[in-house]
Structures are given as structure tokens and as C-alpha cells.
Amino acid sequence: MNYQFDWAIVASGKYFDWIVSGLYVTIKLSVVSIALSFLVGLVIAIMRMSHVRPVRWFAHGYLEFFRNTPLLVQIFFWYFGSYKILPLAVNDWMVRQDFEFAAAVIALTIYTSAFIAEDIRSGVRSIPKEQMEAARSSGFSYIRSMQYIILPQAVRLTIPPLINQFLNLMKNSSLAMTIGVAELMYQARQVESYTFKGFEAFSAATLVYLALSFTITGLMTLYDKKVLQPIKGR
Amino acid sequence: MGKKIGMLVLALAMLGALRGSALAADTLAEVKKNGVLVAGVKDSLPPFGSVDPKTKEFVGYDIDFVKYLAKKLGVKVEFKPVTSANRMPMLMESRVDILAATMTKNPERAKQIDFSYTYFLTGQKFLAKKGAVKSLKDLEGKKIGTAKGSTSEQNVKKSIPSATVLSFDDYPQGVLAVQQGKVIAVTTDESILAGQLGKLEKNPATKGKFEIPDLSISEEPYGLGMRKGDANFVKFVNDTLLEMEKNGEAKKIFERWFGPNSDSPIARGKFKITADKRGLQ
Image (cartoon, rainbow over all chains, first blue to last red; front, side, top):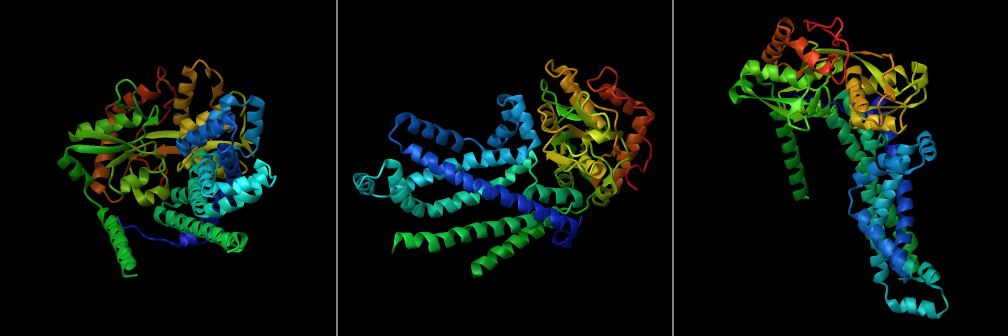
């Protein structure tokens, strides 16, 4: 059997449109989940360093639990497993919405936020503790000290690992296809099952994922240079 | 830079090697020589192909056809589980010799592989909660579940364009989605749905709550899949199928899996294995 390459299939027309619509969903899924996972990760990181024991324990449990279970299991849990714990009315309302997308966002957000929280905590721990003491003695509350003095510096240090987490999230979003979210990978598979041109379809998807990765890295680096560097006042 | 180019050359060479390995061979001679027939089958799709929980053996309608072929060749059988999405590549890359995996014959697929005569005939229907679906109108604008890479998906998109089609990895997941009201119905060939309904009927919690309404959106002829241009093997398989119809073996297999006492009773009606061209025009 000789495989006939046919790049035209994914370069234009119906199948190209499918890939583009998949790209759109992947971007939507990634952007929403990245924003949410950063916020949730920040909150969990602060809880993790809190002086109130139960709060700290909760955050610790959250981290251990979600970092050490496969993302695929979590996606299935939120999509299929939630049926058992949600009231029927809520479930039915969810189904009328875009439940597949929502379940994917929830799973990606929680999973990634656990990693982000740990990265932020490492960043905070590398800030000398005298800074916190100075802030507190100047009359800032714990939360305000974090907000104005510690976290801006910590996040700045956290940029490289954060880039990694955002990249991971974007790549992990391909798992959403298992619950019928029509993202890039799902559409690539669709193209493959309609045309049997698997090599072309998955090559196209690979290139698009690479472009997305470079975009994320580029944006973060730009943010670092333009926004965070001046704060640091070199 | 030189290193990078070296890597690229290596990658291209590997691709070349992959492409060269899939030469059309004489599967019939190969199978006889090796003494084993490797068949790609479904492993969680009763009554066609599933693993018996007690014996850990593959059982089902598809399985029995493969077993008969192997017996006739005088070789052992090795079953490999395949999914709707990966079965064609598995065959083309010579990882299996034959596909007996609820595969609908159609002209696009026939460009890539060769099909046997139709060994099973069914039509695409829906499985839904009792009373939820009375006509195709009830499905418009709703979410409908199916499995990835199957013809079912393409048919339902054609016949009910306003519906949102959700593709799951396999039908049991689609059925779960119906149970939870995430999709109004799951759609595929009646025979597969009958098997799923059989499972639902066995469970006291779901007994009597689901049905397969009498709505059909296509005719689905199943064929055994073989590599393109594998003429000797195709002829052997086709001759064997006709022989099975003549000596009553084909009917016996049908009765075993779809007869009145089976878990998924459906009528064989007028269907007989003949030298047909169904699904290929």
C-alpha cells in the first residue's frame, strides 16, 4: 500500500474550516481555564501559607488530591460522575447549557490550579521574610501585605514555571475531546475519520498546537518584559 | 545547526521506513505459514464482540465468523481489540490480518480496504428514554450521542442537521449520557443498540425505562475488512461466507446472538449472505 499525501485536504475547504473551528474552541477553552486556574491557584497558595490550621490543611489536601490523580479521570468525574451528586433540576439545567465545555473547564482549572499554587508558593518562599515583617510593622494586614508587597514579586519569579503550566493546560485541553468537546484534536480526528488522511489531519493539528505554544510563551515573555520588569525597578 | 539537520534527516528516514513496511502481501499464504490469524474485533460491544467476564474469552457474532474462518484454514486465532476510530489504520499497518468489528461498508472506505460480502445487515436507529422520541422531529435541535469515527455519526449529521452530535469514545458511554439526560438519544446500528438495550433491561434500576423507537435513517451492511488488493484472501473469505450460508452455519450464529432467546432479539428477516454489492455503489 502506498500512502498518497494530499495536503490540499487540510489546506482549504470544509475540512480546513473544521480545523479552524476546533482551534477556536481550543483557544476559548484554554483562555478561560488559564485565567480561572491562575486565580484559583493564587487563592490556594495563600491558603496554603495561612496561619489558620484548618485552612492550611484544606489547601494541602486539595493540592495532594488533584495533583496526584489523572486529568482524564477528573474530566470524566465532572462530566459523568457529577450526575450522582447534583440535584436533578441542576443537572437538567446544566445539560441545556454547554455542559461538556463547562465540565472540561472545571477539570482543567482545578487540575492546573493545584500545580500553579505550588509554583506560586515556591515564589513566595524565595522572598526574604524580612519583607513580610517590614510590611506588617508598617501597618499592612496579612492579606494586604501579600497583595501589595509579596505577591507582585513572587509572581514575577514564578513566570517561567507559570509558562510551563499554561502550556500544559493548553496541551491537556485536547483530552476534552473524550467528552465530546469539539476542540482541535476532536476536529482533527473528525477529518481523519471522514477522509482517512490521518497523517495530514494530525500534522495540521500538530502545527496549530505548536503555533499556540509559541504564542503563549511569547505573550508571557512580553508581559514579563513590559509590565513586570519595570515594577522590579532594575 | 548541523545537529538539527541530522535529526531531521533521521526523522524523515524513519517516516520512510514506516511507509515502506506496508506492502501488499499475500495474507492467505502468510497466515497459513505462521499458523495464526490475527483479527481486529470489538471488545466491549455485545453481541458482536466482547470479553466474557467469566472465561476472559472473546465472544460474539463477529468472533464466531472469525473462528470459523480460522478453523477452515487450520490455524489458531489471535484477537486484538480495536475501536471504530483505529480499526482501519490497524489493518493497513498490518497489525491485524482481518477486521470483524461491526464495520459498515461504504465507497470511501472501499477505496482504502477491501470488503467481504455483507455478513450482517442492519439499519441505523436510536436508543432513548421511553416516550422521549416518537418521530425524527423530536430530535431536531437536540444533543444526540454516537461513537467517534463511525458512519453513524456521519449519517445522523446528514439526516438531522439541526442536532448537535456528541461523539464519545464508545457506545456504552453514549448510553450513560442518555441515562443521565445529557443527550436525548444515542444513535447507531439497531443491532448494537439492541445489545445495549439488553444490558439496560437486565439491570433492575433501568428495566423498562428505555426503548428503540421504530425510526430508521439508513441501511448498514457490515463487511469483514481486508487489505486492499489482497485478492487471494478476499476470495477465500467470500467463498467461506457463502459456504456458511449454504450449510446453515451463518443462520446458527445469527440465532445464537440475535435469536428470540438471546439478550438482543432482532429478526433476521429476508437477509442471507449472498455475493452482494451492498454499500459499495
